[in-house]
Image (cartoon, rainbow over all chains, first blue to last red; front, side, top):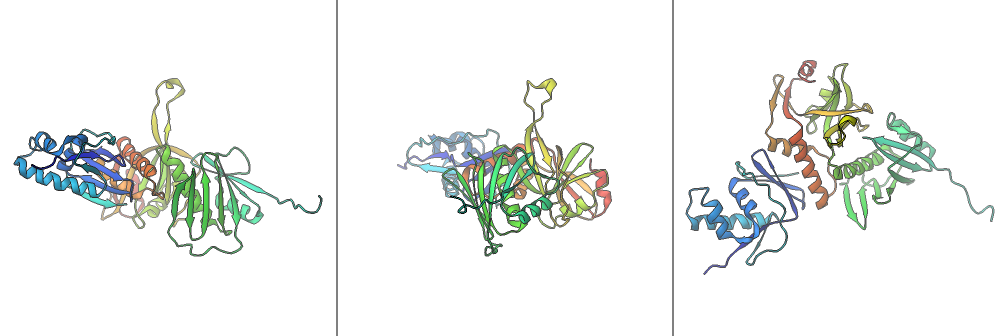
Length: 116
Length: 282
């Protein structure tokens, strides 16, 4: 049986919805990211308490036509990628570190990255 | 005991940019005169200052003026370093010290850094942009080097007041009127700066509410196009002056950019370099 994964929004970044895009800025290196729709959903749901598979089932599978196993694999890869950039925290236990507040409007564009 | 102490003359000048007065103290009369000339229109001989800087003049130029600027924070102080100056500033006491040679460029860089730090906390920023007032409203023209900031400033008509051709000073201020003082009404206000570009002409020391930000592009004709909020935010951030690799400062700058594009219209201004472009502005 696979271990549950928990994800939380890093408190060390700043994020805002501008128009229909979620912009995220890391304090480390002043790097600006634009999240794609899936990453935005994951980011918004990453409260540190809800397991990733539940987020995928409730928020991603309901939004996109995708099989749960495939969606979970993609979500794990995405979460790891976001964690590498310091945007998300990942743990096999619930994360108590208080995440930053989540802007609640969905985004629509593809991921981009630019360095200031 | 007489004879052991020598009284050293101390000269001061208050340089007020963006309505933020900074007193600079020096023992060198020639350096003082240079500051008075360099910041003409922005200086007072005396008066209230929010911050005080003592300048220690090195006899010779410090090495490597082209080195990367470093701005760090520790023990309640900001430390600013470049090849040609070392400076520190303690916001709590409002005091600081600058060590540099007698040149105008080092202190100019220190002032820019200090103002970015002061503004960030207040939701304001310095922006790589020309700016001008027309019909009581300020217009910003942002772009990287070569985008046309100096050109648009040079083409400004006689009824426009030039605030800067290089670095705009933007503050978030409560502009509620006395009649309606119960409701806080934030607005972005652009101030003139002495930070010059190729035009080498100081801006006027005045201010006006910001009516629009234009992102400059040169093209075959004059046109104005709307810019999506996220693109506006990205381009605004790319043109903001930012020195401190400090998490809190990065967050403030980010939030300032997002707030600004929510409140102020942002357009792409494509133009050919002649005066007709100003027929579309103001």
